[in-house]
Length: 297
Image 1 (cartoon, rainbow, N blue to C red):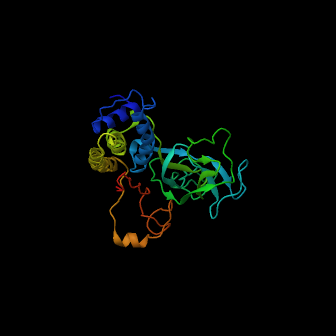
Image 2 (cartoon, rainbow, N blue to C red; image 1 turned 180 degrees about the horizontal axis):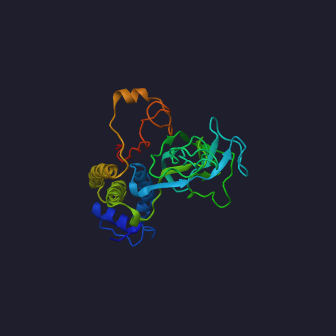
Image 3 (cartoon, one colour; image 1 turned 120 degrees about the vertical axis):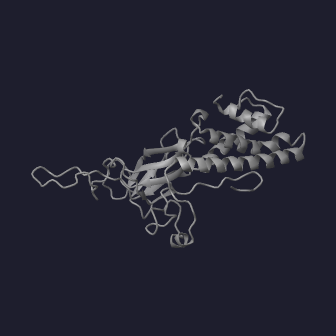
């Protein structure tokens, strides 16, 4: 199977029975322009519409500020009430969770009695490596915009995620040496799950059906759009189920008493029932997918 954005775009043209083909999605023809305008937005929205396993990333965050002033060479202005402020990953599409560091026990100092379990976690010395096999505990965090810290030279472009002359997208938390788990922008179809590709083809087809058919047969274009929206919803549903079965187990079943107990939490605040609010799941929920007919799924 060909593995380029042009191949995916051509599949979308095939799905709506377009008599037009393209040689390259950036070739400049009208069909290519319509596809190009929709392609990258569809890709980003679909990546946010499920916790795709192939797009899961776990990486250290770039520290911008420490409100305590104990970290050299970084700022001290942090949006209250948090202690640390980190830069949003430039390839970050959606945050999933930010775990507390789970340090390993370094053992007893020389001459002391050896503890019975030298691998037991400590409550101090944050920043060490997590215990192998231990469950990652989500910590509270918040996504925001801050104008206090200018972006590096050369990054103020329309293409760089999280940076602009208006400010910088940041992650606020009280976790030191934070590691972020998020959905990464996966540009190359060779990395995609096959169900993700099928969903993207149908989603893209639903977005371009009317623009590409409106001059010849507007009614037919509307019918094609509706058909592709229905196909896309079905493929997204199947992909979500498959991805959920293959991923880390969690409970997405809505429970009335749990929803009432955890109601009122803001975006990015979760960590189990009670505590910091949220649904009580390891991950935050994925986004609904919006379609050109005004429906969401």
